[in-house]
Image (tube, rainbow, N blue to C red; front, side, top):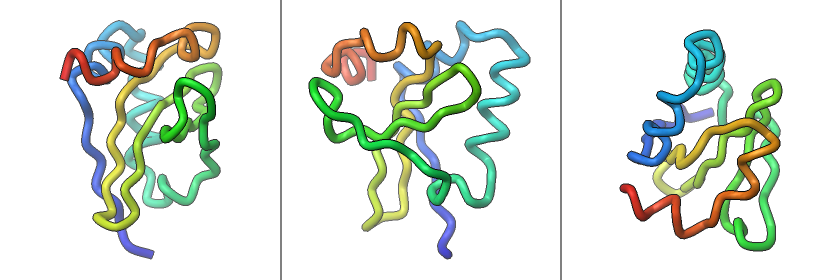
Length: 95
């Protein structure tokens, strides 16, 4: 299996900074796993269609996966109760 490269958006970095250091470490460890793209993700529907979410404890990592170029773009991370209330267009307003 080929290794995917992971990119982040400004919106992801902003939301990541708001997390506690312990949670940041857990999410960074999850992203840097060798089998990150093969970890079961869930394709989102509705206003977040086109995105894939990964569950990391009680947090959700919202990504865009480009299999052609082997690139995963992390666009948002947040608590499960908050992440689905984010409007899709906000992901790229801050980029």
